[in-house]
Image (cartoon, rainbow, N blue to C red; front, side, top):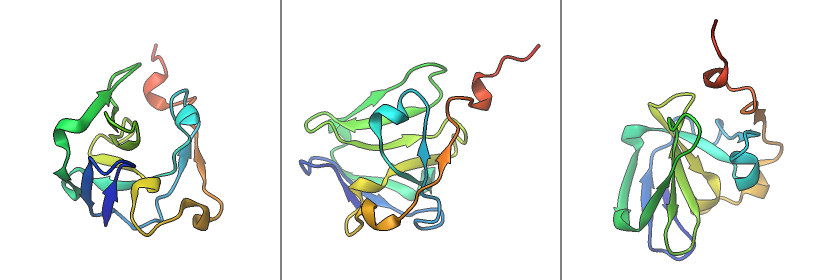
Length: 121
């Protein structure tokens, strides 16, 4: 699949893990503000075709997850997942030919109570 930011400065070639079957939303403090539906891709399944230098990185909290955005238009393109750092979460909104409204009901994951945030005694 091909993914692009809004302004076209960033272009990705994406091979999804299991198509759109992995679509989900998260309610962690960052994701609920961002509002994107994401699907999974292995790290080897994302190639930046254009705009590597136009991506900016945002990290917070445990700094495990890495969230990339286009510096020009601000669109979130993808992130390296905290729950599984061997995968990327891909913003469904950047995928050519896919309209997120056509996906129907999207399951939510509990990012507020993420296992990485639990303190062990």
